[in-house]
Length: 125
Image (cartoon, rainbow, N blue to C red; front, side, top):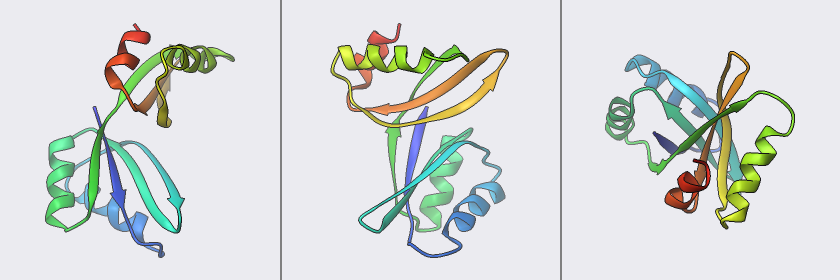
C-alpha cells in the first residue's frame, strides 16, 4: 500500500481539486489527512487504485511523493494503539504519519508511514 504526499498551494479549492480529480478517474480515497508546515500544505492520501491515482496526478501536473504504508488491524478498545506504538518504539522505528483506514466488527485498521518499514513489519508480526 502507498501513501501519496500531494503538495498543494495554500488557498481555497486545493482539496476539492485533488479529490475531484481522483473521483473523476474512478479512484476511491481510503484515507486522507492534511498538514501544513512552514505555510506549505500537503495532503496525505491512500487510495484503492495507486496506478490510476499516479497517472491522474502526473497528467495534471500535480507534484507528489509516494511512501510505503504499513497497516495493522487491532481490537477497537482503549490502549491498543499504545501497545502498537510501543512495539515500534522498542525497535527504534519513528512514525512519520498515522491515520485510521477503517473500523469494522470490533477492530480498527490503522495506517502508518515509518522511517524503517522492514523493522516495523517485523516488530508488528
